[in-house]
Length: 178
Image 1 (cartoon, rainbow, N blue to C red):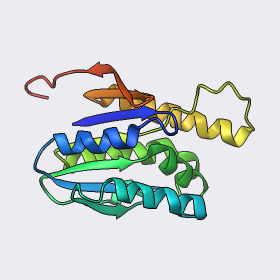
Image 2: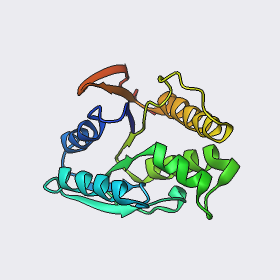
Image 3: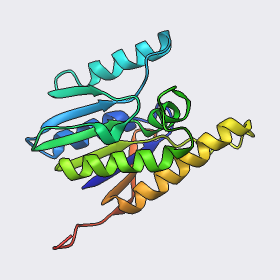
């Protein structure tokens, strides 16, 4: 089952997502890290996130592109952090999917969903600032928006974290036979 968590930068969505995974119970906890460490700021953010989950028994899998190729152990709960990084990686890295970003990432999420007991996905709310961007950034926003919308439709639960407060616009119980 898929849980989608969104929010702005610094909203508390990562901490909320990690707590959600812990609350799912006694699973192999797999953290799929998508941030490519390209500068000092990214190294600091990665270090901060590793410290946040240090005592929560996560195994980390680095995945910058090609999510559909990730294999995880049975009886796992996956935390995919985060779609905005993965989308940028698939668009701009040499071995990324380029214009097939949406299909590539959705196929990757389906791959995880088939293997895992639970899949918790973190994404970013990047659409509220009202700034006019260049064409490349608009294309990125378009791809991420489409991915977010499709995953929200698939997800059992969707939560937006606002100032550390989870707001849950979708929480459906899976019906028998699904």
